[in-house]
Length: 485
Image 1 (cartoon, one colour):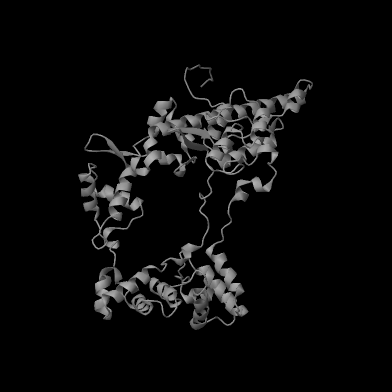
Image 2 (cartoon, rainbow, N blue to C red):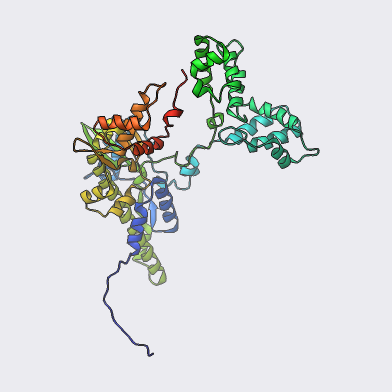
């Protein structure tokens, strides 16, 4: 078969380098954006940190008619309310200048280790570190210290030891191998460390250790120790009256002991641990209220102070050959970056302003006022594609008077109500939480009764939906919520 040429007509999407960069920057949260920009400045000689940044108005653009020098004079004037718009917002809301949302790399401080967000993170010690530190402070022999280190390694994050002594001895393998009594003696010392009760092998032992460390004259201590060792597994079913029948005590004595028992921590290991990965959040936007109107602006971390290096830009005019081609290419890349950063800020502001219009009740009254909202609705209102809105919302946070919230918190699915409106899933979850908080602890509401209560309020929800929302709230089932008092 002979080769031949053939033409065909078709359409396909081609992503230019500029568009790829714009999409990439749009989906980056503030901290990752800082790292991306710092890397760009380091690799591109045509990019430089700006010594001064223009004043920022509420729309995220430079304030008209105000130069950098004027902004500097305004910031230096303590009694003047002009100056940098973002700084002025922070002062009025009680934030200190230079804190909160100050961009880490601005003003040429990119080489400062303290400006790195990773270095600003609180270094939290683990439970293992906390216990090991106490172990080495104790007066133990080298052999007992090795046994203690093996025990600490086996303790889980909630503070319980679920590994048998034989496995610990096998992993340790000293000469000679320690017996159960020797391992138990070291474990008893660990169990008295901070937090008290860590290293317990079950709930009964955990509560007993904590109660045993209390002063002997603590009201209800003796009876609580007995309950912890003999009745803890059956306590939810027995209740206060069952404790009286089993131990022959009065109702007042049982109430005092049970109250003391409930004050103990069933998961002592949770008191110490790593900071979650998402605990350090830098908001991309700020929502404030001015004269009764909600307004949005970009946080300073989303407004990197970049500029074109003037010296290199002038050099291009007097350079020829390969050097000129290289500098022109880097200049074009720098302009693309600045343009895409500006486009990112404009897109983010459009989305946030739309969320403010749609969810002003949420900002005003909380989760119960959150109305159903989808990405498609926001995209249709601001005239963008749904995927663009999704990128703008992903991993972004906004600082509001109600705290720092994820932008995805403003979206929720909905259920039609009997009144012809819609109730969001988040609002329904809050209704379920309120019903459970107000229930009789002796007779907690089942999922079916919760569904009936919601239906009476005009929100028809199936029992399985109530169960799904209850589990999403990390609330136990009705038979596990029975209170013993």
